[in-house]
Image (cartoon, rainbow over all chains, first blue to last red; front, side, top):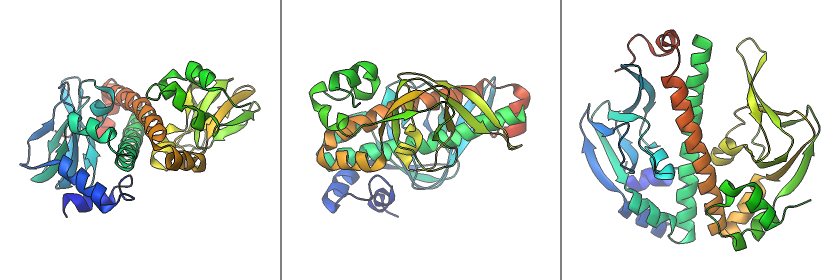
Length: 150
Length: 165
């Protein structure tokens, strides 16, 4: 599936017109990621967001000296969004579990999109908010599970 | 009574930080003042999205269902709190039950009112979504912190010994 097709399926972007989708498509940089490669690292100060096109990505946190898998992401997921919003260091590490293709949007391009024409800015902010909400639900369910497991 | 733009900005600076105060009027006119008596629900866990709520006075307890069917009070939201932002952003069901602990006043923006705002004043809608995203980013960091600082036996039970790495 192409980046443009993935974007068009994201809830926030599905209402965009073709020209706006083309502008979004052009803002992302695509790359191949081998299995095991770190895409974002906890504590780092980079502020890019990523869209998983194919493959699978694990989200990992620390518990003492051990690494725990917080989440597992499939194609069509936007990830690495929190630092894009709050400008703070990365909270977790994301690593490709299998050979994957991702498309990345750096903070400068994201800021540009936020100040773009209204339809793109609104669609981008809707998609960002929606993905953050889904990420929060997944993590909150895990945190609640810990209470039950304790 | 609906708030003035100044009152909205003073009580909820985080919500309107990204917007110019002069731009707030279209948002203010769409806020619905709602009063809840003690015990009344703003949202029911798993129920329909209640819309975005700005808590003016009073408070809500935050309750979650337990596996045994009872409910557990996780905390309380007081004046200045924002309600329903998760379902507001993803359109999903309510993530918790919110029960008024006293007579409570809320300024509510339902989804239809937000869509009308987005159509007529998209820049203001973008600013509001951005503010809600910032609120949620902070909650995500807290959720990760809860997982990373949980008791070791809890982590082993949920994630397996040694984690998934």
